Image (cartoon, rainbow, N blue to C red; front, side, top):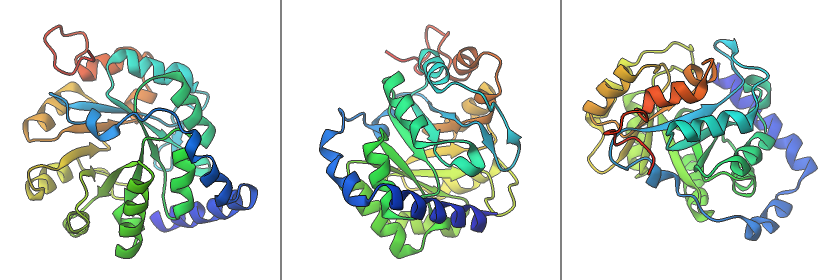
Length: 266
């Protein structure tokens, strides 16, 4: 499955580059707004929630095809989310760079551009369209590509969530000296989800790294257990996008209604 996703990502870059040359994106960098540090939002006391906006996914199809970006991300912000993740892949997730720009204008939370980043062009796109961070998937990149993307992203003042799924990928991320490591419980080859992946891999993550658990998480009880083993943040999409009341679901997950909760936004 991941090979097809990468192929589509490369085709999309080629099409967009033909419409907007990279030089045009570079010329717009100076007009970026005020920085909203993504990594810092993940290390405040308690477990931080990265709330995701996506209309569909390859594994389950449509989730909320007509979802309104502004209404959804503002509900996440009111519910106590620490940061946002916005899917920008159109063919498989129904996203767009317009969704990224809309989310940026609608709230004050730092935003992760979540996509299959396979070309430096996408980093410039992210920077000028409102992203504060990008997702780098270890399985989708060679060691050289991963290193170059990571260095360029940091040069563009973009934080990086470096995603792994197994021990070998974790070692590659550690050799990169990535600060924020995402452990994806979903196998991108098969689509299967196993939350035990986080519990298995986190024991090999050195102290001082920020760990984000991704995929297959939907309840406050799961968050509390992940917090107990040292996870710093969780990225949740499907459970929030399918909720009848996304603000209430976000509050349930963050504990924003608990007056003693450290998850609550100041």
